[in-house]
Image 1 (spheres, rainbow, N blue to C red):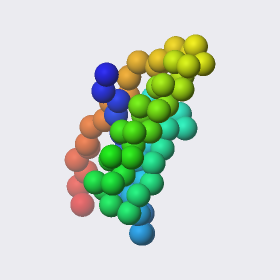
Image 2 (image 1 turned 60 degrees about the vertical axis):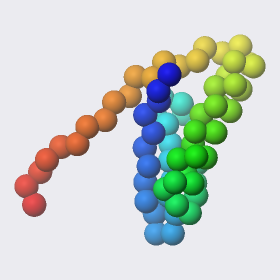
Image 3 (image 1 turned 45 degrees about the horizontal axis):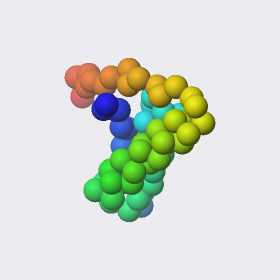
Image 4 (image 1 turned 180 degrees about the vertical axis):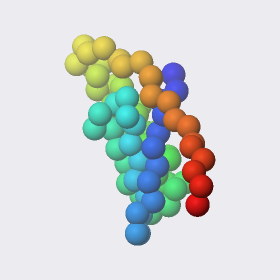
Length: 70
């Protein structure tokens, strides 16, 4: 399964979250680190949902870029 991950750059760190998995987030100093951490967070999140007998949400979020005049 592939989940869309949103990565945001802050003043001193990067944050990542998964729209299809509320509460699944990660923060790190670099983009590379935050991507590794969010991958681990997704795995743990899904394991926790399974352990609790909950349904694993299907990935449904999509993204695209929109061109606007500057």
